[in-house]
Picture 1 (tube, rainbow, N blue to C red):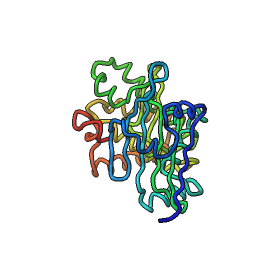
Picture 2 (picture 1 turned 120 degrees about the vertical axis):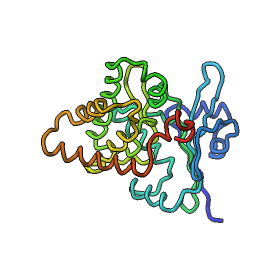
Picture 3 (picture 1 turned 90 degrees about the vertical axis):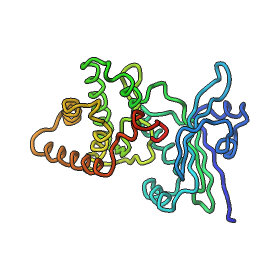
Picture 4 (picture 1 turned 180 degrees about the horizontal axis):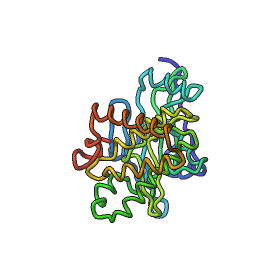
Length: 275
């Protein structure tokens, strides 16, 4: 019942590529059968696709949203100054980060299905990043790294957060498992659904850092690592203002730890698909 409308948007020159593979419509993508499940919950899932052959072979990840709650539709509407889909939010946010020179995944296609203008389903398709998930890297190699190498990664994380906040971008999901490390030492971030901009609120930024610190288990990141992260992030701030913000960050991190530990996101405790 009701008027259903589909929209599929492609980035750059990707439309001919997918057309050669017979992928054109919303259902072609959203219902594509040959996928590998990565993770899922009741309202969304992430799957991995390998398409094409030879030089045309690419690995993609598709986040699919299903029958979003009305509260999510309204939150998206407020955050984007108009109706858009859950996938549309990530599509726009990834493009915004790229325009600002921030590392993130490359969105190649986005689709939305609406009924009377309200989202019923959507998808966001991205190219696989040429990088390693920072959580996987830490779990697999951290103990074997020399102290200097560890500290360079901690500083890179802090500078990444500092750059984002300097551009008035808030990323509530700025956690270790959403950061990816490239071979040149640079970082990219994924999972942009809750990203907001412009975000000038110091409270929002402090909460981002609180979540980041919460994601750094003491099994790998000791007190000196944490202090280095804060010193780098607050490089041009000292005195009372810095102390106030650090206390706010620590209070928020403590609140998160009372609710649940970040340990459940580590493969040593639970499979990666839980992330």
